[in-house]
Amino acid sequence: MEKDSNPLISILIPVYNVHKFLKDSLTSVKNQTYSNLEIICIDDGSTDGSFEILKHFSQEDPRFKVFTQENKGIGYTRNALLSKIQGEYFAFVDSDDQIVENYIEKLYSVAKTMHADVVRCGHWESRNGEKKDCNPDRRKGPVADQTVKKLLAGYHDSIVWGKLIKTSLLQNIQIRFCETGVSEDLSFIMLLFALTPSIVTIPDLLYIYQRDNVNAITSRQNRGNVFLGRLKNIIYVCEELKKREKIDKPTANLLTKLLLHHLSSLRKLPTERQQQETAVFNKSIEILKQLRQDNARHKRFIYTIIIFLLTHTHGKITFYFSKLFIVCF
Image (cartoon, rainbow, N blue to C red; front, side):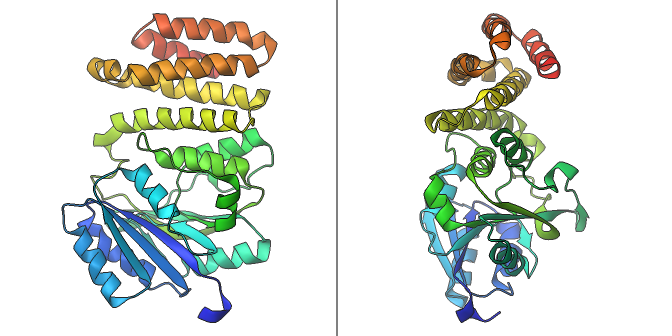
């Protein structure tokens, strides 16, 4: 592609202690067939030499813009990246992943042709050097127009990578990442889908998700943080939609189910960890009470019982009752 005939596109890369994977990741970005890029990297206080790799790439290629900060967490870092965008479109790439060489070219071509605000693609999962297609059917189809269906689509596709997003859209809908926990993609994508007029899905597998990083948030050793992070993100979605007056009865019903589902998962944490998260639990109950008012009249009594049991029972009783509620309603 000719550089002068295409708009600037920003690639955003948050970096934290990924020395083993970083060089391959940055090389895949550097070698894109679409060349009019700014590649913005923020090192979030790495201690393993990742920043030195970033500096090397910036010295070789002026498209790399490298910044560093003391460790602030992934949500804060993603928001910092958003504040530096100069391109007409932007895309996130995680620093332990890779993209195929025509990733940006293909996504931009579709965005331009279809006049899309967001274009999403399929991805490979790489483990031990082998790649496989792990895209479930629910992530392959078009995104429906109704708010509740858009929220569900975002919930099932809660990954910020694998998407090209129009920068003016972000400026219009004014969303940011939740900074209070991990799984920050979840709330961002749910809100992005709920508030976006035009989302196009293509079947091409253009992103390579790295499963070999044992320090990744999604690894088994981080399960407790993920449980808590996803609950915090559902709370964040509820608060943002309430602020924007976007909660109708179907949306309130969906958010109630999601909140109960993730609230019940806290019971899988050790008792001492549950006690540490009292504030999150109480905030969840507060939002459940608010959502009860937005639900259909015949369900309000059921929700009142649910809230009472959540606040007066412990352990497996709460967990199984919440699961039963989700199945029945």
